[in-house]
Length: 371
Image 1 (tube, rainbow, N blue to C red):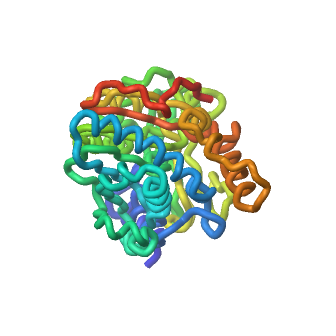
Image 2 (image 1 turned 60 degrees about the horizontal axis):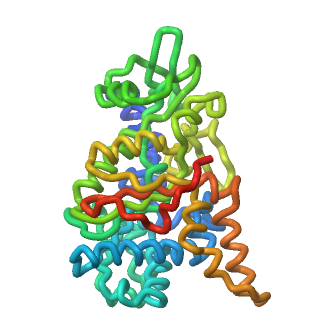
Image 3 (image 1 turned 180 degrees about the vertical axis):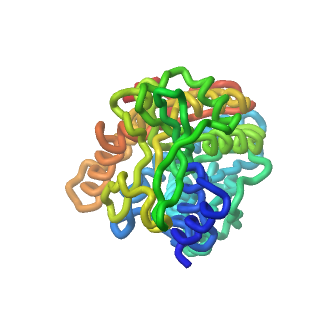
């Protein structure tokens, strides 16, 4: 039975699903979900590109920031440095980070206790081979966040992959978009909002949804922030993701919302309900909501900036060779891809939060702007 058949059967049995429930099944069904069926979904042979696919330079940049965070924690008395990657996939980014830490920050590397968190069993199975020599550090390979962390929890493009609720404003007021079925096909419908957490989220939002517009509400992403903060005893949360402030999300720029579907490097947003399990589904992060969730969870916001400013602040440009050999040229092209305004440089946002370490001035949190 296909995942579509499973979902249609469930709807016939219990009624329409919220978009969040549909996305949870489409992306994370244990056997048939998009992410759970494969150990890697990005790259040339995948459905989309991430900063990791550009090459090891992104991991090197993260290692620079982690080394500075370790210095802060070490000065405060820490003797080990927990480095936790959430949504780690098959371990490619962790490998790049660890390679750079071993080569350039040996003291930091010696103290790292690495944990990779990944829901997909297929991806977890690939992690030991990907990590290679760093398996000698005896990393922990888990499906859930560890209960106690003194160090850093970091993630790249994790929050935008969490299921979202979709809300629209009609002439009758706010309504939630839900997924129904007609003749074996999945279709949209709407109903009154009956989720108290969703109602509270909307009341706290600073913007008003225009008539006819749609927005995504990331309750799962906000809950993950709370869970990460609960486990973080002392240290930092470092997140890279697509996101906007409400002034952009609740505007004519995104009248249909930001829920997107990708397959074979093509955007197929109108087809997001078709072939569940065979396409990526994402939605841009509401940065204000994440900031609120972090504050409620006891985290201090150190910075939310475009990726361009983060990478420039930690000195990425200074790490590039000036020669004309193939390796040097490749690294400069990779840096351009990571920092180019209009591309990853401005569409990707960097969020840095702290807990129980005050509000240290880190290089990567040098003031920048959001676009």
